[in-house]
Length: 227
Image 1 (cartoon, helix red, strand yellow):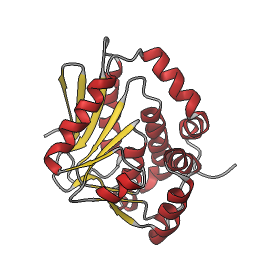
Image 2: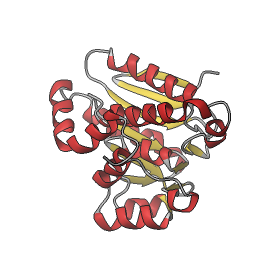
Image 3: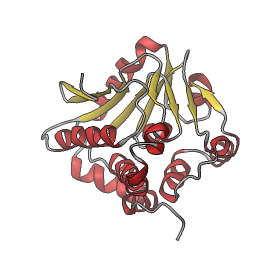
């Protein structure tokens, strides 16, 4: 089974992450970028939906075990590639919807936040930014991404407490746009994507880059530390 599967239904590209907990390591990021390459080369009306292939996980963040082992030598460059991937997703020229079918933790939560819209299951799974509890700093671009998506109070609480936030609460806090039963996550995400698929790519990309210029620039620069 491939790490990432992409299918198209009408104008909707459905990208399914199929690596278990979908932790971010070199193979995973390369597969995601390759999938986005294919979507970006398409023409005509389109939108992108991403989801996890297992019932329990959307993405559990960086693959810390890989980074402590086989990936240790490329840690700085790999982190930069993650930042650039988030920037690419945030500035993607077609509408994007995260169908959050399970846990979205740390960098996995940031992948969800990099989408234009988010649909989360209400009955299971958490959105969580646990860096405060696992002693990992948040790169400037990641912080700018989080800040651009959350209200000031939710931004503060999410980053400084590491709270685990379920789907219903995430909807109340404005982290996600919809919280629905598990079997409705993908259909609702696809419906939302379909309603946006006719947007012109050039203007859509231009508007997104204008709206989130600071966050996108920081992510695309790959800056790991503050200037």
